[in-house]
Amino acid sequence: MNDPTLALTQQLLRQASVTPDDANCQSMLAARLSAIGFRIEHMRFEDVDNLWARFGNNGPVLVFAGHTDVVPTGPLERWHSDPFAPTIRDGHLFGRGSADMKASLAAFVTASEQFLAKNPAPKGSIAFLITSDEEGPAHHGTVKVIEALKARGEKIDYCIVGEPTSAEVFGDTIKNGRRGSLSGHLIVHGMQGHIAYPHLAKNPIHLLAPALAELASTVWDTGNEYFPPTTWQVSNIHSGTGATNIIPGTVDAMFNFRFSTASTADSLKATVHAILDKHQLEYEIDWALSGEPFLTDHGLLIDAMRDAVSEVCGQTPMLNTVGGTSDGRFIAKYCPEVVEFGPINKTIHKLNECVAIEDLPKLSAIYEKAMEKLIA
Image (cartoon, rainbow, N blue to C red):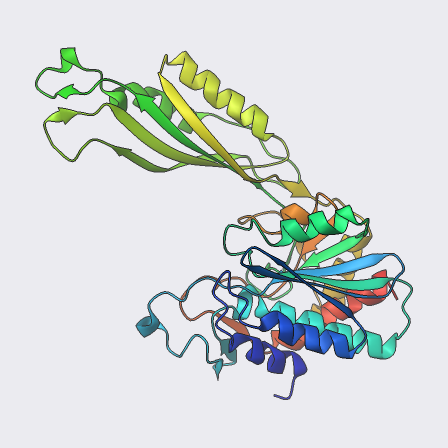
C-alpha cells in the first residue's frame, strides 16, 4: 500500500522515543512542515523537547496537538515483532506508539500537506503543538508551551488532539472532554503496641476501616450529559512492620478521584475531610491534582469533526469523555474548543500495539476535511 501516512508512521515508529526521549521524532516532523511553509520553533524545557510550528498569521488558528513519547515496551520476548521495527501483518501496523499516537502525528502532517496543496493561502492558520512529555509527569511539555504562547499573546481558537479515541470501529467516538484526576495520600495515626495487649495500643487499620467503607459508598455526584458520575478508588493500603505480633502505629492509604464537571477538587477534598473528621481520626493528607476536568460543548469544532468523520467513515461519531487524562486538560485552559480524535484504542499501552492500515488514509482525510471546514 503506497500511502504517505503509513510511510511516515513507519518512520516515526523506528524511533525508540520512550518518554521523555523524543528520539529525533520532532525533527522529522519539523522537516516535513518546514518544507510546506511552517515556521518552526523548538522549545526545550528541562529534559523535554517540544515543537511549536505555525503556518499563517491570521485567525482562526487550528492547532493539532500530540506527543512523540511512548510508554515502555514491557517484556520484549512477549512481542511478536520488535516494537521499534514497524511490522505489517494481518492488515495492521505493529509497533510501540502506533496507535498512541504516532499514526495521528503522521496523519496531521500528511493532512496539512494535502490541504495546503489545495489551499495555499487559507483564511486561518494551522499550528502544531507536539511534546515528548505526555506519557510521563507532563511537567515540562504541553503545559509549558501553553504558558509560553499565552505570555506572548498567541491565540488558539480550535484544537484537535490526536489521542486514540475510537472504541470498536474507527470513527465511532470523538472525545469532547476528560475527567479530572485528584489523588490523595492519607496517613492515619494510631499507637503501636504488642498484638497480645490491644488495650495498650490503638490499631489505625481498625480506626480507618469504617471511614473507608463510608468513602467507598459515598455518591460524589451523578455526572451530567457528557460525564459519568465521579468515582473514588483506593489504589494502595500499607501498614505494619512485617512482623505478625505488632499492632502498627500508622496506616497509609492512597486513593484517586476521577471527577466530572459536576464536582470540583475543593468540594471533593472538603467531603473527604468531613468524613474523616466524623470518624475522629488523627490523620494527614497530601493532595495532588494532576488535571481539572474540561468540556467542549457543541460548537464549530465539534460540528466540523462530526461532519468530517461522517463524510469519510459513513457514520456519526458519539461524543464522550471516558478514559484517563490527556494534554487536552492544559490546552482547554487557553483554547475555547478542544476535542480528541484518533485511531482505535484497544491496544494502546499493551504488548503488540497496532493500528489498522486501512484506517490511516481515513485519519488523514478526516483531519484535512476539518481544516477545510474551519480555516479554508
